[in-house]
Amino acid sequence: MVSVRHFVPVRVALACLCALLLAAPAARANVPGTSTTRLASRSADGRFPNGRSQDGAIAQDRKAASLVAYDSVATNIVAGDTNGVSDVFAIHRAQPYRRNAAHATIWEPGATELISKALDGGPADGPSYLPDVDGDQLHDSHCVAFVSTADNLVPGDTNGQPDAFVRDLRTGTTTRVSVATGGGQADGPTTDVQVDGACDRAAFTASASNLALTAGSGARKPLVTGAPPGGTRQVYVRILGGQPDDKGLAGTTFLASATGRGTPGNGDSYDAQLGELGDGCPKACGTTSGDAAAFTSAATNLSPRDGNAQADVYEHTFRNQGGVRTRTRLVSARRSGQAGNGPSDQPAINDSGEHVAFRTAATDLVGTSGNGVSNIVMADTDTGRLTLVSATPQGPHVGNGASANPSISRNASVLFASAADNLAVVPGADKNCVADVLFWNPVNRHLATESTDSSDLIPGSPNNPNADPCPAARTAPAENPATSYYNNFVAFEHGSPLIDLAVAEADYPGLRRDPVRAAQMAATDPTLHQVYMHLVGP
Image (cartoon, rainbow, N blue to C red; front, top):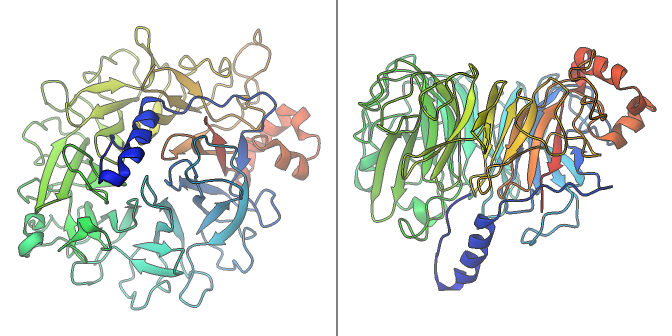
């Protein structure tokens, strides 16, 4: 998800390979007779679990996608899940596959493990949710970050607040990351968390008054800020250590939703997103850790050009090479640099921080006035150039339905959910009249539907090209896509029982021949809302 980098001479070959991969985002698989979609959030016996699952996150280890994490209220995914609340799970990809494979292959499910474990290995005593997974071009995935209200995951958790945690699957240890520089507990709740590719840095949102680094020296001095206004949500970064980029910073927690001069945002900031690997050559050769965080903010003092009194998207960079340098920039801005005339949120950042995709209702950013719905825009943070993603390349023809939840890959490909039915024609016309997950290719700017079933068909869309749109019994919408590192895979949520047809046949024999009944089940049975993995392309 970053630009071509040259770390040291022995990595020249790797840099050349990266250049090829950057030039060619994954093409759509669309292999006739090949089942490309699998149920990821499955029960211990490989069938539908007995509760809703959501918030899928994919390991960012190149083309491997070795882990898929998600949260679920189901009790039959692993043995011994008796707490009756949401837990975080990770399903391992079944062998054989190769992390350095030239081409991605069908993702097959393997063993599932409980991530949100208590200290004694038993169930957590509170809900756990919103996972994120590490990994990048240099680092294999081995960590899952998540938020939990449980107080039995780590020793000394007595603050009575939801906190952010990271589980290391290699060591079997869990670390609380939403803590102050001295290790003190947050005095307010944490609401989201992201981890970088090496699992040495984490970004999170918290409503706490005691987490900002308000005094420091040496390498940490540029990270010193004022204390944020009481009662506001703010975005923080925790440096866990272990990478060259962390020299002099290990154990530091600092406020990211602040100006480059250390002034805290005067309003809520949230939607924390963290790059995986940091910028590359020629700007920052040899980086090994994420050094850019994107977030949404209602603050009015983070940029002198933010005068719209609406939520906007920002990026804060904190590169540590020969000393820490910080910068905060307004991302959802017009060519003039002024904030858009409507709210923007839901940022998704690629691993270098060079591209940020986001949702916007502004009509003056990229010429979307007139369609009256939210759109997906991608910003080049070096040049400030904005590109409309939720549009066809000719025109552009903007979507006739709202778009949301972008997820961006290393090479700036974007996956997002959209209720529009006029954007994609691959694998066929979209006639289901519910939201689908679309893939935007930055090379040709074409769009394809990726929330397809295991026969590569759009769920709930009549197969007859002459059929009228909007079936009487509509299926569930596709939601919340998450991309893999090179956009070869996408995880998405869906409530239809007919996404993984093999599982559907095992649980509901003959259901695939009764789409009306399947649509009715999708509308009435929340336990069918699950997380799926789909092969986008090799």
